[in-house]
Amino acid sequence: QKQNNTPRHIERNNHSSHAISQSAFILFEMKKLGKLALMLLVSNEMSSGAFSWTMIQPMNSKNTAINNSKRRQSFLTTLKLSTSQYSETSAENETTPQVPFPGIDSSRELYPQWNVLFNGTLKVDPTHTLSYQILGKPKSAEQEESSTPTTKPHENKKLVGLFLHGGPGAGCFPNHARFFDPERYYRVVLLDQRGCGKSTPTGCLTDNTLQDLVEDCERLKSHLEIPHWDLVLGGSWGTTVAIAYGQSYPESVRSMILRGVFLFRPQETDWLFASSGGAAKKYPTVFQSFREAVLGVQSEGQDDNDQEISPLAALNEHTRRLWEAPTEEERSKAARSWMQWEFFNSVAHKIPPSTNLSDSNATMQAIRSWKPPEVPPVAVTSKSKTNGESKSSWSYQSLDQRVIPQEVLPDDLSTVLDDKAVQAKFRRNISSGYRLDDPPRDAVPITPTIPYYTTSPEGQTTNNASSKNNHLPVQAMLTSFYSSNCDYCRNNLNLLDPDRMKKLQGIPTIMIQGGSDGICPPDSALDLLDAWPKEGTIELRMPVHGGHSMYDPLVRNELLWAVDRMADTL
Image (cartoon, rainbow, N blue to C red):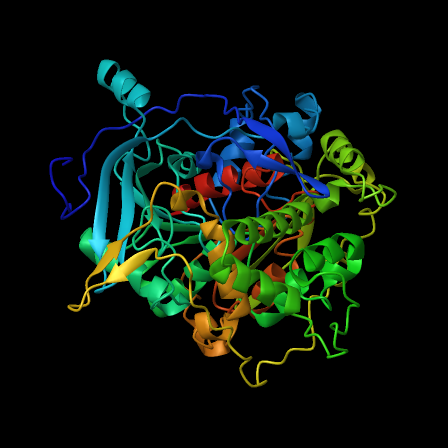
């Protein structure tokens, strides 16, 4: 198969595989950038994607397999949630010693590295050529399987998963496949979206909208000659693409898992990037540094000529400088400022209010010292059609999926048990006064100063990105452009439109949403839950102290459980 340039199909076989427990160790280093210390990843393969540069915590090497097979089997057999489903029965409690609830050190680890079976390209229009990878079971599993063949319950399903990265602009890396169990999934496909990763032309803005990305997912499915994607896993911006894809081609998506929900509404970008947004109001000192990096020292509402400054002035000026700065120095300054602001918001939940944010050493010490409660709670609810009625309820569960009794919950959650209280607890009130019937915002036109690509008279493009240019912050550049031009880039679509939402009713979905996510606050996940069609099935799992990154131990733990469960219910 590797000898072919474009595979006609995903090769299938009837072999089973064995999961090999393996610890995932993530390396990172500290670098001082301006007033804050930014945690940068040594390896791009650890990129979390999606609207942030996040801190990755070292993973504990402890194997956390669940020993209680009865409870695990009960959990894996259905998507429908009831608070009694995961709790021990009274009879079991009488005969079995109570197992302590696990702490953060017992969060699950990633699966072993998958094999890259094929690196492919797909030309989707005269401008764009997409890059994708097909991954199969790890070599260690293949070797063990060939020596001791056994019959596995998942071996005949041959499930194929599609991973949609975040950003926009993050790109895919083989580590993203490690959220899939090689015993349950046959193949995983990683797709670099337009202008991202190894797709060419690098950073191209031409015909690069949400609907274009949706069509690319369908083109790739047809190219690989598969009837559907068994699971579409998207994170942050990847959830936007996944939702829009499911709404456009519901027959192509059997199930979805959405991590850090982002619905691409102006109020969501405003919350993070506008001077009137929630993040700026919560952390005015840090936002002031973000503004001054590109606008200079000015009063918040007026420029040097006493002209009114738009609340989006800092966002739009970052966009212009990232794309149009005449010098590398100006572009780098804007990139550092952008990354600092996103990084800070991705870890701000770990910083005590009393911390002096102007002191980078104190700030980073607070982040390193942060710990969740001894029993990190996960707020869980679901909506499903039962006896002709759509029902939902909330509970708190531990990292091994057991219901946490009220007396064990932290004091600030012990009374947050009904839907009204939960919504009030976790919503950030991201609304910026924007209404869906408001006229489209003015676009921020961009004329890139870097010739990433050239177009021939025949309309063919050539990627000119040199090795030096490849180190430019393409994710920051694309994220800023999409954020400044959200109406254009989302094709003026309202993903929560009832007619579009109705098309998702046949797609079982699990949302994993960090309760302390500062990049994509829980509001969007709660809005999607409220808008989910009554005939459909959806579950929201919210690790209360989890952040934005898919590698956050609390978020990672929930993702691994969800991907396993989805395979067992298909």
